[in-house]
Image 1: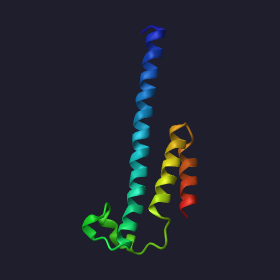
Image 2: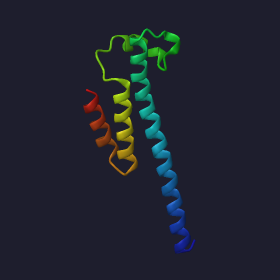
Image 3: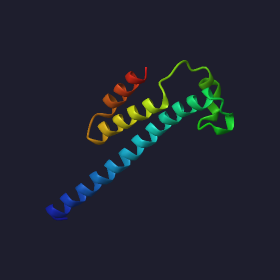
Length: 101
Protein backbone atom coordinates (compact mmCIF):
# COMPACT_ATOMS: atom_id res chain seq x y z
CA UNK A 1 0.00 0.00 0.00
CA UNK A 2 1.10 3.53 -0.67
CA UNK A 3 1.43 5.99 2.21
CA UNK A 4 -1.79 7.72 1.15
CA UNK A 5 -3.69 4.42 0.95
CA UNK A 6 -2.35 3.33 4.33
CA UNK A 7 -3.39 6.65 5.88
CA UNK A 8 -6.87 6.35 4.39
CA UNK A 9 -7.20 2.78 5.65
CA UNK A 10 -6.10 3.84 9.15
CA UNK A 11 -8.73 6.59 9.17
CA UNK A 12 -11.43 4.13 8.13
CA UNK A 13 -10.41 1.68 10.85
CA UNK A 14 -10.33 4.45 13.48
CA UNK A 15 -13.80 5.54 12.39
CA UNK A 16 -15.18 2.01 12.58
CA UNK A 17 -13.65 1.48 16.03
CA UNK A 18 -15.11 4.79 17.21
CA UNK A 19 -18.58 3.84 16.01
CA UNK A 20 -18.36 0.42 17.67
CA UNK A 21 -17.13 2.02 20.90
CA UNK A 22 -20.03 4.49 21.02
CA UNK A 23 -22.46 1.67 20.26
CA UNK A 24 -21.21 -0.20 23.33
CA UNK A 25 -21.35 2.98 25.43
CA UNK A 26 -24.97 3.44 24.33
CA UNK A 27 -25.79 -0.17 25.21
CA UNK A 28 -24.35 0.23 28.70
CA UNK A 29 -26.13 3.53 29.32
CA UNK A 30 -29.42 2.11 28.05
CA UNK A 31 -29.09 -0.75 30.54
CA UNK A 32 -28.56 1.75 33.33
CA UNK A 33 -31.51 3.83 32.19
CA UNK A 34 -33.64 0.66 31.98
CA UNK A 35 -32.81 -0.10 35.61
CA UNK A 36 -34.07 3.29 36.74
CA UNK A 37 -37.09 2.97 34.48
CA UNK A 38 -37.92 -0.33 36.19
CA UNK A 39 -37.60 1.32 39.62
CA UNK A 40 -40.09 4.04 38.64
CA UNK A 41 -42.37 1.48 37.02
CA UNK A 42 -42.53 -0.64 40.18
CA UNK A 43 -43.07 2.42 42.39
CA UNK A 44 -46.25 3.28 40.50
CA UNK A 45 -47.55 -0.29 40.78
CA UNK A 46 -46.21 -1.79 37.56
CA UNK A 47 -46.33 -5.55 37.17
CA UNK A 48 -43.45 -7.98 36.73
CA UNK A 49 -44.22 -8.64 33.07
CA UNK A 50 -43.48 -5.00 32.18
CA UNK A 51 -39.94 -4.93 33.57
CA UNK A 52 -36.84 -4.59 31.41
CA UNK A 53 -34.95 -6.58 34.05
CA UNK A 54 -37.46 -9.14 35.37
CA UNK A 55 -34.69 -11.38 36.75
CA UNK A 56 -33.75 -8.57 39.11
CA UNK A 57 -37.23 -7.80 40.41
CA UNK A 58 -36.41 -8.68 44.02
CA UNK A 59 -33.39 -6.36 44.02
CA UNK A 60 -35.38 -3.63 42.32
CA UNK A 61 -38.11 -3.84 44.95
CA UNK A 62 -35.59 -3.34 47.77
CA UNK A 63 -33.93 -0.24 46.28
CA UNK A 64 -34.11 2.86 48.39
CA UNK A 65 -35.01 6.32 47.16
CA UNK A 66 -33.63 7.19 43.74
CA UNK A 67 -33.67 10.29 41.56
CA UNK A 68 -36.61 10.78 39.19
CA UNK A 69 -36.27 9.13 35.80
CA UNK A 70 -36.23 12.51 34.04
CA UNK A 71 -33.15 13.53 36.04
CA UNK A 72 -31.45 10.18 35.39
CA UNK A 73 -32.16 10.51 31.69
CA UNK A 74 -30.58 13.97 31.59
CA UNK A 75 -27.52 12.80 33.48
CA UNK A 76 -27.12 9.83 31.13
CA UNK A 77 -27.39 12.17 28.12
CA UNK A 78 -24.72 14.42 29.62
CA UNK A 79 -22.37 11.48 30.24
CA UNK A 80 -22.89 10.16 26.73
CA UNK A 81 -22.21 13.61 25.28
CA UNK A 82 -18.98 13.92 27.26
CA UNK A 83 -17.81 10.52 26.04
CA UNK A 84 -18.76 11.31 22.45
CA UNK A 85 -16.72 14.52 22.60
CA UNK A 86 -13.65 12.50 23.56
CA UNK A 87 -13.96 12.57 27.32
CA UNK A 88 -12.63 9.65 29.30
CA UNK A 89 -15.16 6.87 29.75
CA UNK A 90 -14.20 6.20 33.37
CA UNK A 91 -14.38 9.88 34.32
CA UNK A 92 -17.80 10.29 32.67
CA UNK A 93 -19.17 7.21 34.46
CA UNK A 94 -17.72 8.32 37.78
CA UNK A 95 -19.36 11.73 37.43
CA UNK A 96 -22.65 10.08 36.45
CA UNK A 97 -22.67 7.69 39.41
CA UNK A 98 -21.72 10.42 41.87
CA UNK A 99 -24.66 12.50 40.65
CA UNK A 100 -26.98 9.50 40.92
CA UNK A 101 -25.92 8.78 44.51
